[in-house]
Length: 314
Image (cartoon, rainbow, N blue to C red; front, side, top):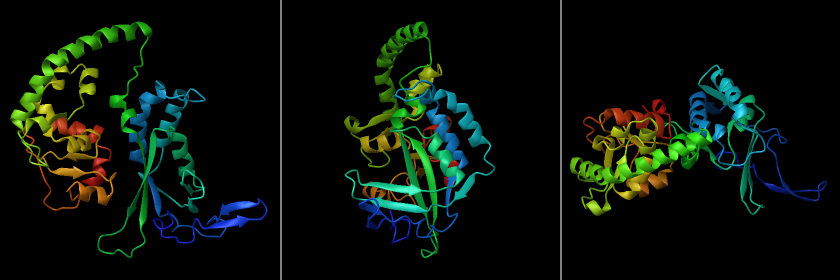
């Protein structure tokens, strides 16, 4: 962490004679700040996180000490009232606490936005991503650090397993769900065949063997059913033929496509991972698909499945 934040003296272990144990230097105690106001959160990222987390706030799958639904509207109001989209702050500590078995790291700040993001996040299913931004034409420039929060994919609202309904409605929904599953089983093979006929190879691997291709939904199946858009759930135009690894990348929102079919890579994965995937996120002539008549579905994917804010990348 100290290397990441360009401050080599953070995280140095020393013996605290008063507490009679090893502890760590605090940059604040040493009068050191990481380049002041060079870290920032994004208002749109907070709004997206709360939108994704709304179902969990109101239909809790995890155990919480309090009913967290009581805090949702208050927290949303605080986020919406932020004056600008980028809110800069300073941190005074970034420590590698390597003496603990968990190998935990610590980041600390006294700024009000830091307190707010800690209020927003849900335990165990939330991630903090820190993107280090350095100008391409000046690697020696002082970097900015973009702090972002996101919800674990399995807890994002479009795959959340619990419904906000009464017991009678749940029973009715269970019957309807069984009927939908029967209908889907009848139509799924036809859907898969039509997707692959329309797109006979994975654009990444060029594989054409149908046994290795997945008919990946662009607009998630669960959302189509939830919105009573059953025709979209089995529409072959709402599908891409992808080999398994790239299906997962697309399905979980690490990549998406523009209206003209150009690949758009998110910023959640490391450059090492992209290299192993044979994808160059910064390439001028990126791989593309031919999205005839699929623009409506791709627009949904960019705005509600893709894990980054699409406006930050275009």
